[in-house]
Length: 175
Image (cartoon, rainbow, N blue to C red; front, side, top):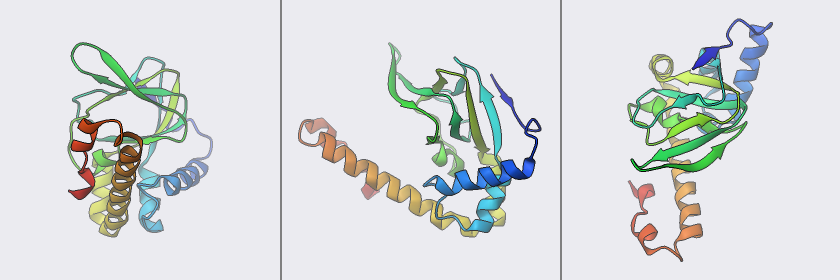
């Protein structure tokens, strides 16, 4: 269960500036025009999660993106028989950019392993803002394309020589 930290900060203008600084560092937002970025920074909230809370759960379509300010989480995939920890998230990690762009069920769960504070933006707020500032979209789409390409390149470099099945399942960057 999360709880908002809105209103608990003594300086909302300071929080806005910090949100803006953070968004500029996230690849998903890094090519977004500054005026659009200011709107997104204003719409972000800070949410707290306790150890054991789920930020999102597998199969949900929650439409939320998270930037971890403090604490740690683990990304979990459940195959019906067991929960597999895929990777760990820590301060500075961002998750959920694609959920802002459209509806999609989560393939994983993200569980807090310590108490956490996250910067959060919802799909509803994001899409309402984008309808007013459509010039924000090209930079975000370019960031998504670059991230997919980089991920697939790293995957091929790390796995292509040892895993024939892995090689046969690549190609997402040619969609």
